[in-house]
Length: 115
Image (cartoon, rainbow, N blue to C red; front, side):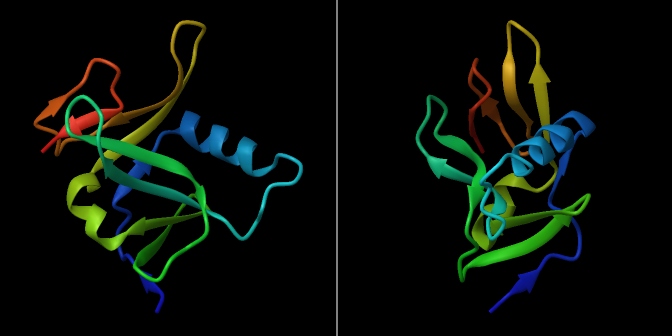
């Protein structure tokens, strides 16, 4: 059963949107995949962010950010609501970064957090 989220639980900065679209326009990209945002156990602070392309699953909620189809496991909304994802393209720090207002503690690398 497909569930849509009325409000977007996370936001992508303009830089993140440009990078995600660039990846989606790569030759051979599987257009049946959506951008998955989520969490998993692990990392130095307890939970690690998940960001990548994946096929939708039954327990997912669907939403769209600037026309980018996104999925998130419904149980992850509690941890990620209000989070902002940015893209850093500099020489010293390259990659996606996460700013999560729900995190009570984050690690130095910015990829794991505690609630």
